[in-house]
Structure formats: structure tokens, C-alpha cells
Length: 238
Image (cartoon, rainbow, N blue to C red):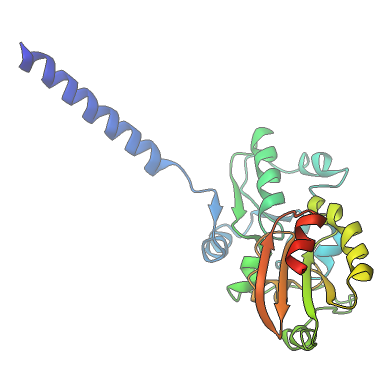
């Protein structure tokens, strides 16, 4: 009697496992690292490539043949509605946050094949892949040598990596400006827009915003990723 019950149960378990395994194997990977993203673009040369950052970010450097449709702009829905939903689409942003939201939105709207660039253009550049730049834009990229020169001081140096579109960054801006004055005898506060210096951000492994680095005698002594209050930051500076 036990065998009669046990055998169907085992078979059912094996069938369920096999079925689930097949589903996992057949599921198409949608988030690709830079190497996979590059290879997939080569495999699908007629697919649409979308940079969902701001026009300002796009103009300073973007993937070759990418079109710019700002995720936070007013015409994202209208612009993407003109695309063929049955054809593959590639999306990317600075570090992956906005492109993930854009891809989710597009899939919900009926796009059948949307690929996201893991880590965004920051990771893309970090892995040595090329970018295109609008010819009429004057480069404002900060070099690593220039960055290192900012650390040469007997004071503490607080570096804030931010972006204009970053909500937590905007929230921190007022009190960072206050601290520049309040602690000027002790601390040098430097703010670096990662959209203007993406290669530097990649070299320093900036993966999220805001990111704070605190240096003493050119050595990194403390770091913080994400929002921090003025009170907590002041404790570290003291």
C-alpha cells in the first residue's frame, strides 16, 4: 500500500521538477552584462537601442547608434509608442536604475523582447567598451590626475559624487553647501557630477548615488553610499 502511494508521489515530484527546470532553461535572459549586451547587439543589428538618460547626459557620451528617449521626460510614453513592440529593444542608463524602470514599463505596454544593460554605461565604460560623443560638445571630464590633485591638502577632503536627476543627491545639496562654510577651516568639500565625469566614476567604482568619500592625507578613511543626514555626516567629519 505504501509503495502504491510512494511511486506516484515520486513520479509527480520528478515531473514537477522537470517542468520547472524546463521553464527556467527556456526563459530568455533580459538583464545582460556589458559583454553579453555587446554580443546581443551584434546578433540583432536592426534592433532599437535606447539611451533613457537626459539629453545632457546623452550628449556627453552614449553608445553608438543609440537614440535618446529620456525616461524622466514628458514624452517617454509617446516616443516609445511609435516603436514596433514585436521587435527587440535594448535600453540603458547611467547605472541601471532608470533603464530597469523603463524596461519594466515597456514590457507592461506589450514589448516582447527588451534587454537591459547591467550597470549601465558606467559598467560599459569600466569594461573598456567604446562610446560616441556629440561633436559639438566640449569635454568636461575630470581626469584621475586632476582628481588626485584635489586631495593634496592638510585638511580633510569630502568628495560627493552626485547627479542632477538623483533625488537623494538633491536632498543633500543644501546642507552640503552649508557645511562648506561651517567647516571650511577643517574640511574641503568637493562635489563631482558623475554625468560630466563618467570615466572617472567608473575608475573609482562608483556604482550608486550619492556616494561620499572622505580622505585624510590622500588616504580614503571613510565612505558612504546613499542618503545620509547632516547630523550623521557631521559626526564623521568631526
